[in-house]
Image 1: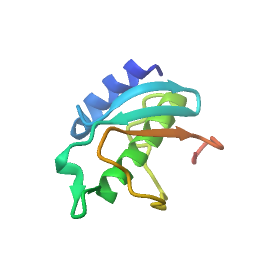
Image 2: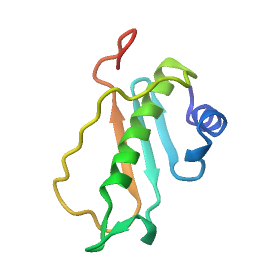
Image 3: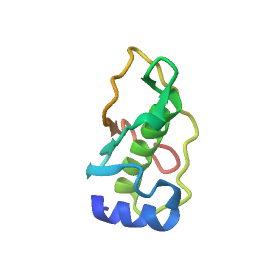
Image 4: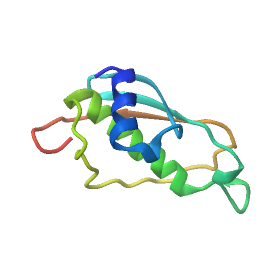
Length: 107
């Protein structure tokens, strides 16, 4: 699927994500997604909240999977962990996902 096809599919099956991120690039096994950040994404201490970063990571990988396997609305995350290494400044966050192995049932 192309970036435009993935975006159109997501608008149809995952309308909650509409307008929350921009698919910049996709290819087989990869995706680059940009999520505009604003004051609503901050937690106390003026850092971007972990759930916003986690959401971006999950969506970037979902986009990479869709770009690779086609329109499968029920492709779901079975496991995801994140380590916060340093405090991000307020600004757009970019999520780059790369699929290491794409199997029949799991990516």
